[in-house]
Length: 386
Image (cartoon, rainbow, N blue to C red; front, top):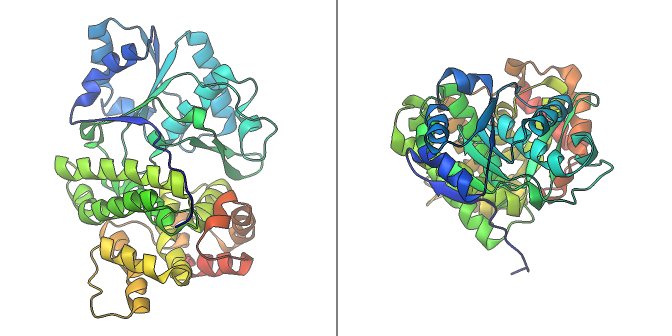
């Protein structure tokens, strides 16, 4: 067994309705005023109500800011960081999916580290040197897992690419995992974010950087998603399904924070910058096609994936069992009705060269189970096209 280290990132508090104690958790971290960051959709469906009520009851001052866009760009982050500075808050609570949480991580970074978020993105001119403003995350989707990780994904519109800023200082102080905050999630969002979480688990499991601890978390996340995602999509008010998907998303993110990711995320990040495809949608779409290409990199682990997703492989050869992994994901994706062809999400053949270029520059492509070249990325895109 190779040497490894394992990081258990944010502290978790899990419970149905636990978001009603948000003010208490903020006070435990010494907050005197809270900056609540969310998006317009969260405001519309009243998810914030119990959180705000907790602040009012605790007489803890707060300010709500919701001018956040999906797949936040550099300009949005820099502008929001200035709003936070003017608020005089000393702790941020992010409520929402990956976009508000990644924005929150970035603006907390910019309170204690000078410059634009552009300076800290992969390939930038600065490194994070000071601890960030404290952050508590309340995820309303079960997919991005950003509430647990040390990275934030930001869109660089100038260069048409999504990039990450990564440092241990970005890990939130606390993740409040409350299934009640996810009951109103629409079926399509549930499906794409759930498959995003599955992508995290699968890529972490087959990564060249995987270790026994990340493997255990990745496999458990796969089992939970395979068992509960269909129900969460079909019946969004099923608390048991929501609870298990919420846990699966968080532990899948811990797995990938330690084990790494691969070509699916490379393509998805590039596709997001070039063709503006939402990250969860891109991962969900590309995942099974990339698995078909990657299977030869680790037949044993792909067999494990098939078993975790409920496939019967007892009488199959190793290769036949391994091939069942991708087919299991195809079946799951079809059952929860996500797009399975690039043409459905607005990606054209003309986008391919830029997507391939961005993918080849993805820093975690090096830990993908197969060493891939441009022709391999093209092959994946062509299979996924129509």
